[in-house]
Length: 335
Image (cartoon, rainbow, N blue to C red; front, side, top):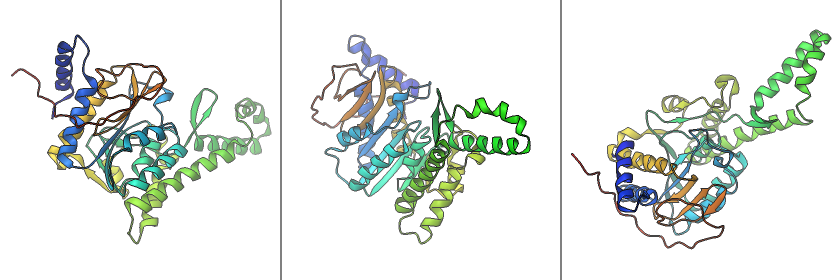
């Protein structure tokens, strides 16, 4: 497996041969082609640039449905490998995307090379199995609501209301201290919190029971136990807390170890490293299949890109693509 540094060498070599422009797209697609040659299973990557802080545009939104329609075009079912790297986003948008993908693919294997958090974890639950490395993580699925200028766990809001209620009932004089805090919450917020929590648990439970545990006599029971654990704010206390594959498996998820197949591990991590290097350019979201058909979000613009020297902004519009089979990358020069 080429390491992060070795892929960087490949990019520098490509830049030297291309007038200073690294071939981010060509090298990434070559590794995607290598993965397909190894597994013979169609593959789609969904990657966003979020580990260094990211932006709101890195979230899962309904806009991603257009991306899925693009990259699923010409990809036969029923098998699919999906590689996820996302901080999460809208549960409702994730539900729409899951519904679309499951109409075409009945055998979905989900790879999490580093992290699929929040709604990304829920999206993973819609796979038949999840493949993780020692370093990989999922995350809690307790909902977050935008209050003012920051996201707040719904359960934290509910707990704060309960605490205020208890303290005011015991000592009405504390109302003066609680009033400015509670005033920031709009009407109906408690009901919204409870509805969001119920939705996360319901979607996670339905996907697990319907896909990962399909045909299992205890599917509903297993699925609900897993959904309850991942959605339990009281247990995790932080929406950013990583949940390892060991913990995930101990709760009943069907998790496979990426290291069990060395060739597969090499191919998947090479795709991961090459894709993360691409974010050195202006791209903030890449959805792409093994044929090179891609939907790339760049600086608030959507562009369909095919074999460009590097992701760059282009005028709005659709550029038709002709999918082609990538070639495997050459190893870096030197001893």
